Image (cartoon, rainbow, N blue to C red; front, side, top):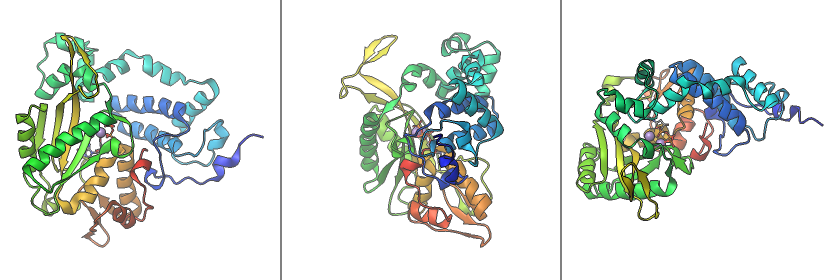
Length: 370
Ligand code: 8DG
Ligand code: MN
Ligand code: MN
């Protein structure tokens, strides 16, 4: 009467980009445990270990039912020895000793709190932790010289760690649209990132901007930012120009997933009047909140690649690139797809065409929650 073989018989493909991974799935307890270990590895700058836990968690997210016993996992890919051990422990005891130890460790708690400050990465946080700085308040008191991003991150710490709701994302979208259309009529604005995958909350709001007349989008960001600044919508912004030149970059694999689009990492000042919500601050309540917003500008010809590259999830993106390289001898970035055997760039006018070039079934955004 054990549901034994049901899951094992179904063959599950090993790349996350070959699978449908919905937002809501059946193995939250297990994936939560593995995510903690992934996070801990990433905070310790052990990327390989982090990816292994993320892949195991993503596999479980794609299963059509709850895993009740370890025997159901036989034959499934992506489950390394360490992940399997953790899964078995959780299935048998309800908790994993390693996960418990991690969540209670001073270092993990401190690293999470410090990297939770906008502008602070794992390296910086680790340096501070070793100096005895464990919390944002410790940092405030330490008298350390902070850069502009970190100062803003510290100033709006509590709000930026409050989830952004879908309705807040929509409100931000309306402001971005007004700004973009004021400086470039006909430009198109698309909500990307987690919200495009159907998430109801996010840590930020991401937008991709383009214009059907190639070239019209050039230099757009500084104009949009000036408009937003003049209207008092920005608490912080850092704009980076486009540095992508197909001829110069060539087909070589970029060093990281950082792309070269014109972009702006910002903090918006969003009125909360409409939601009837007040934000509590050290200086009393107020009727606006800080929201992290990422803006990216793409030339029209690269738009499908940018859309695919910025919709996420991060693991789904990583798996797409890994699939491209190892299974297809192609290089995928947020700008282009290069076929190394035929030594040519493959054009695409939609995400569907990119999946087709890659020999993959089309996976819609709502199923890219790997
Ligand atoms: P969340 O904000 O709801 O928490 O999740 P998310 O929307 O999936 O994460 P994100 O950190 O906002 O990233 C959105 C996507 O953008 C993600 O798939 C990674 C992708 N991305 C690139 N290039 C770059 C880059 O240079 N920096 C960042 N931060 N993200 C990038 O394609
Ligand atoms: Mn996001
Ligand atoms: Mn983002």
